[in-house]
View 1 (cartoon, rainbow, N blue to C red):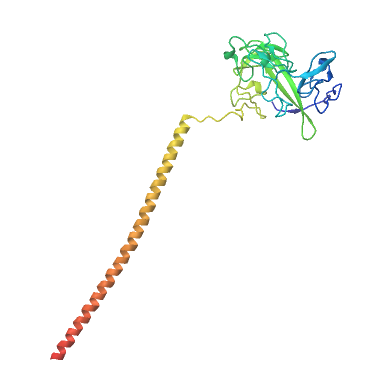
View 2 (view 1 turned 120 degrees about the horizontal axis):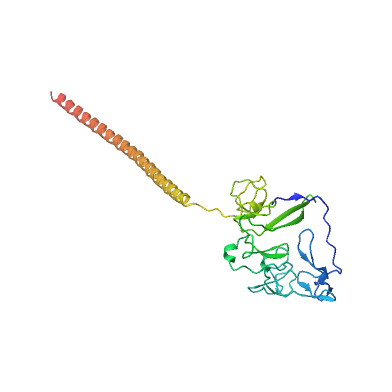
Length: 302
């Protein structure tokens, strides 16, 4: 969705109770009670750095992380030993304190961590880019993305605040719901699932479009990252045009070659005609000279 200016000052995140050393926070004292989400970006933060987690609420210490969520986790260098990824049926929490079993529907989960929720039996039918195997974490609770047309739905809106180049605060609100996607969206007024809009129809939010892309002009559009699909008739037309162009080039080359040959033939013929005319003229001069000599000899005899 489009960003809009924030109407109030952003409260800064309070610094940790201790300053992390250049070598990292491993072994330093911490408290898991200070685990929190950044008020602007909603990124998980704690008394420990990105490579460690806090072991306890009281007299805890920063310990090396026992798992990771991403293939390339934030805060690690290229030569660092990475904690392992969790196997199927488990997840790595934001703290990184070890793999946990997937959470059942109705149980608590962490913000925007759909991957923490166990999938439903018909997950293949419900799965879409807007959920994780048919499951969602909405309002910190695991739910299924199985609400259909006319059924009540759950809306979960999260505001992310960013500071622009002009130092102005901008808010980007992400709204998620438990309706089946991309067939339906959750109407914010009726709190019911409604059919999504097709490309070209008027929209207010991304969730209203079947393409999940409502452009700033308020019209559902195809997302820019979607690859262009070429229709069969376009392939056929392109092939026909290519062959027609190749045939036209061949015909033009043949015609140009013929014209060059005809021009060359005309030049050669003109040359031989001139040579033949010159030869006839020379023969005529020789004949006239011989005839004149014969007449002179005859006149001398008489």
